[in-house]
Image (cartoon, rainbow, N blue to C red; front, side, top):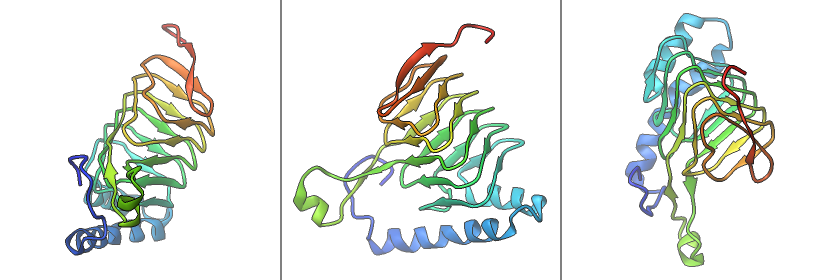
Length: 182
């Protein structure tokens, strides 16, 4: 599953593990903002790794409860973050994620017989440090977003975005470079 190979996500062992990961996420979303200390504990329990001073505004959603999500330091994600975290999602320090952003690592084969069988494969997503992702953006499987870049709101990111740029559109393309100090 994490190697990027085609597999059956309905496999009983995979389903049992995935179901076990979702409990913390449900509790986190129920807390709202009523208990930030418990929220921090839950983030550490459910995510693959969490740096210092990270916060995810509830509610958030993840196939694996965040098990395959790795956060650097001071990452902030606003409400309705959705992660199809069947593959790994790595987000660098000081990254800001606006509301209603989706990270999707899972994809399905082009071959109709394999799709009919319910098979899938995953491609990891990498987001650099000091990135800002605008509201409603969708980051697709296998994408890397470079350090210091800005992804505009409601954009579909289906290819790598280099460091130090503003990128917008559907599909997302580099609009301009970010000059040093801007």
